[in-house]
Amino acid sequence: MITIDTTEMCSHLQQKLFADDGVYHHIWLAMQDDAEVTAFVRSRQLHIYRNGRKVLVLPGKSAPKIIREDPLCDMLASEARSVAES
Image 1 (tube, rainbow, N blue to C red):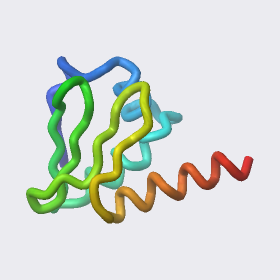
Image 2 (cartoon, rainbow, N blue to C red):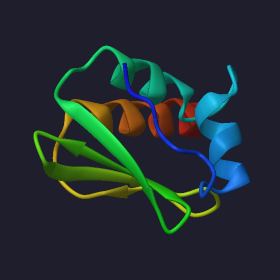
Image 3 (cartoon, rainbow, N blue to C red):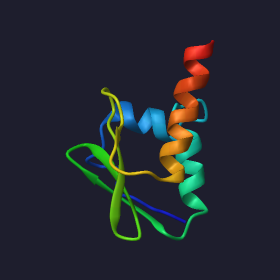
Image 4 (cartoon, helix red, strand yellow):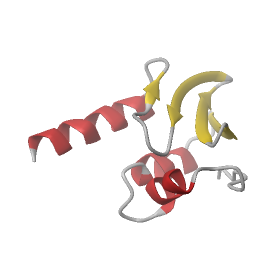
C-alpha cells in the first residue's frame, strides 16, 4: 500500500486522486496493489515511478505528463478515450 505526504499536494490533484469520482482515482487504486510503484509529491504534483524510473506526472490543473510506456499510463489513455467518446 502506498502512502504519500499530501501537505504539499495541490488541492485540485487531491480531489482528482482521492475522491471516489475523481478522474485519477482508478489510477490511485491500481497503484495500491502494485508493489513496483512508488510515488512522491514534488512541486505540488504527483510523480509516479516504477522500479525507480519515472513513468507519469499527475498535476492538479494541467494535463498529465506521460514519461514512458506503463500500464498506469494505459489506464489514463483509456480514460481520455472514454471521455472523448461521450
